[in-house]
Image (cartoon, rainbow, N blue to C red; front, side, top):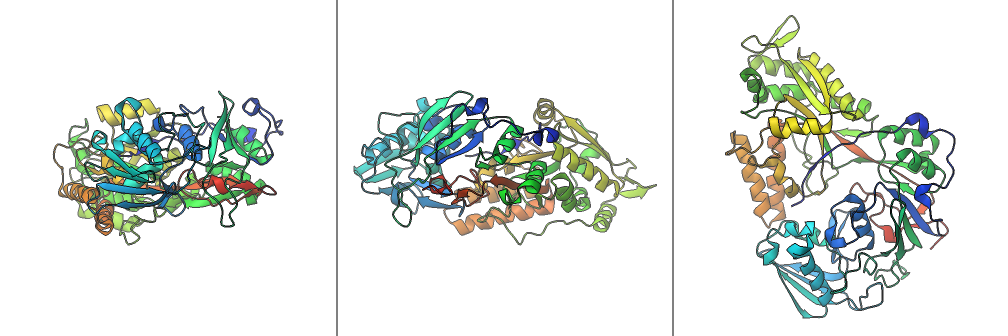
Length: 548
């Protein structure tokens, strides 16, 4: 099962330095000259591996994406599964048998034939414990998977149990020549690994035997190659992009986006909300070292809803993200076409309603200060990670919004190890503001957040039994979507979870940061998508103007 990761975006850029006098067009990361027709952009670090079965980092994942031939591809633009090396595929009604029919005449990049034997070997290798492939765990019981190859074009995969989203799993399994893994140097994808210089670059060359052609029959890929410069310095990356040394930047902070927009407006694009969320929550854990009256506040639905109603999310997006974020009311983003519930009813900014709700719950206002029924003034701190400008700005804006309810808020930035210690170990905190990066559009990947017995059930981790009736209902709905073979039934269950979360506000969702990218007007064939890799998901169709 894919997981959600806490996301830390710590800006270390110097805006003044960004528009300093132009840098020379060569640098340590560009030790090789750019070839005619070659695409170029950067990755932040050296790939940890070129073995496609062992990928567990973003840089290695990109190399695998550009080089691997796969049976099925999860189309980042349409968000649907599309056959690739498989001409067709079928999943049995019980979800336990997949049958793939390969295209005829498939070849690897070295000209050798690609058959069902290679496919079976590649899948078995991924499933072997000795390989250590992260994707293996997504089969739930990898040791029980068996594979038949009744002929050279047919592959039958038998699963011991049904796996939700099984099609997307095959997007992560590179088909390699049987018994001769090559770390990307012999592939069935659009490119092959041609050269790697540590801390400098990775160079890819076109696969001369790639199976795909464009609509007019022209062989793909168009580009003469890809150069991935290993460059951690974002200021340098942006300057070199401005000078035409790089063709694209796939992730821009809002302030840099705005500066590039002023200089080259045609090169930047705000793609709208990402799948990622920024949210705050209160510590509801019974064992937390907090006064009983504070626990009572945080466990009160009325209190959480009132706080949510007091927050002006449009201001968070406008000020903290310079307008490049979208107000959030659910854990599913509007960018997630298959799963977002547009009919969700959630608290909106309404200070009067917030005050009324608090009064009905027994809170009272005294000399401008909110007090509970026992006279305790309502005050708490919000933790967030130090160095993240947007989160600190949001926390400060929330501090101001809650002051309108008579609530005193203290913003406490902590370095990330100290923050995690408080959240995951001592549970010594009142409220927290962080973000989650959703690496899979399928909500099944969020089971570790929503199930009440999960350690990542952040507001009250590892409950032995659901603490509330609504948490028990979330458990039932999430388990229902995880066990159903009916897409409509799964959607209904996830919609119900979205509404429960909107009603109860265990997470108070704030914004979806927008996807901000830049690409050269000379780059043709580009179709930006909100899912990674946003700009190069169709890399085989990209080319520089004047080349083909």
